[in-house]
Image 1 (tube, rainbow over the protein chains, first blue to last red):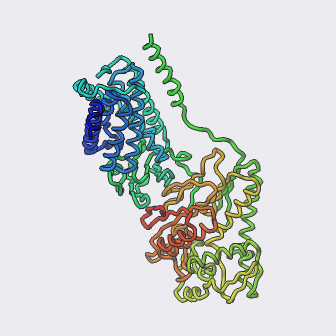
Image 2: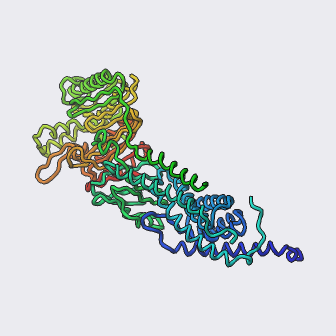
Length: 180
Length: 125
Length: 328
């Protein structure tokens, strides 16, 4: 029993915040699932969850972002989707997190740049998965459209993340993992 | 946030991705407008199910799961047994290109160039 | 400075992509080829061959067609089948080709529970769909002819055919074209040909692919429309596309449609809800026979037979409204 009290404060704080982020991500995902998809090109997911991913990359690292994303995807997937939607979401998230982390590492880009390209990357990951699952998938049409919409929604999520992040500064656990 | 909101490099980054996307789109639209005889190709689970002329009004049954229609040169998914019904709500496609996809049923309806410009090598039946 | 370089890089990068984009079209390789059309088996046959010896092979194919007509034509008084039908003894020895075809015909009679019957000739010769007389035979003649239809009266032992009755007569119209196109493909293949398209009166058979590597594209005729109006297009390579339909030969009399797919059990044209059926597979004779069987027994029964005996075939059913649907 005594062991619990002796855990460093920081770790518990971090765990608590991650839990909050995960809950937030699931909530956002839930809301997003309610919004009807576009009629022209199906499969456009707004990618609002990227707000949380961005914050996690900013305050922690890609590991935390990935962990929370996986939790969110599985939760939303089992509630609303199926095996395929989980596959698409995972592919999109993975690619998006990878791209955003790399861009951030260079230190040359701002949040807007990172998140808009991250949004585009998210959609690209989904298209790639669709092509793998369904040979003959007409990516020549879907990819460019989704790249553009990804950029657009990415800008929005980027701005939102920035505004949220500024307010969270100092309140979220200051401990950062060493960058990989 | 430690990372600033916006830096000049962002313009190039976004610009590059956007240009690539626009380029791909232009190529696609171009390819579609170059179709001398566009026709509908239906793929089921990556195999060609069949190809159909757009000039012929017809209703096509795709396996047990979907039904699509060609009417006045436009293709629409009439019914499908998938839960999300996205394909049914997708805008109709016509000779200008496009595609309707039913991911759960692995059905793809898309416009392609008819082989031999609409002329088949021979006719059976 | 850095920004300028970056801008330049992107502009330069786009140019080759645009250049590639403006190219279009692909060429087809030129090959030695031959194309010929002729009249055999009461119909038009058309063959296309791509091969360095295309002309010679074409001659060979037409020679083969002529030979086959000399064996299988029930109307040609000089054919082997004619002599078989006008035999003087109940036991006749026939050529390998005829024996093979008879054997296949009897087999399909079995798996179709007698719907497909090669002894249908007595019925068939009562009807005329080709010469324009358009007569509906009287009931009595039909009944009499139907009595004479019975494939179980034919026994095949190697090249020896035994008939239990002198009235039994053979018509191989439901399977001969398939048998012949198979033979033609075998002949072409033996002689090294890798690309050919054969159309025997609407029975299409393909060898390999077109010289440019693409598959042959075969249109499926729309029933009761002008020749060339299609329901759909399929691709074929090393397979056959065989379509049977009530629209191929028919006449109308007294408001009813009489077509050439006669039911050996009734003596009258088959009455199902199908306008046409198309089979795609690699056994030409089987597809030919099965297409006739389908038109005789209807969709459900045909699906049963095909699923049991030939599950790998692709089948398209065209109903009376010309809606075409693939068998799953």
